[in-house]
Length: 83
Ligand code: SF4
Ligand code: SF4
Image 1 (cartoon, rainbow, N blue to C red):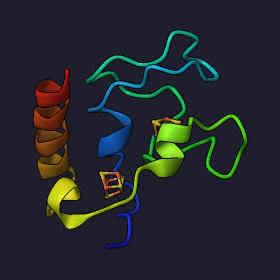
Image 2 (image 1 turned 180 degrees about the horizontal axis):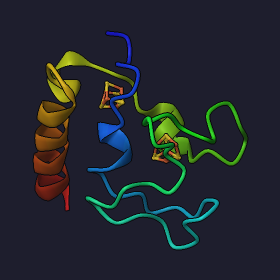
Image 3 (image 1 turned 45 degrees about the vertical axis):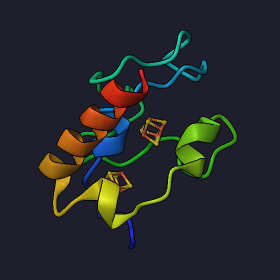
């Protein structure tokens, strides 16, 4: 599936362990990424500083659900399972 514009769920629910601009120690699960704009777009999109994990994450129905609320729930559960 195509990523839903203005969703932003995968920029909030999962943790990121690598260091990147504004997050020198990575990002905790459930923490809103500081690189996410108010309308939920990535300020680092297309830039070298964007974490590899963000680049590698691909939208898929089973993880993105029907809307951002559902995506947050699924991603939070996955984060819990893989913690
Ligand atoms: S959770 Fe899925 S649809 Fe939402 S921003 Fe991430 S990739 Fe896109
Ligand atoms: S760097 Fe961009 S894609 Fe990665 S979590 Fe932050 S806003 Fe989302």
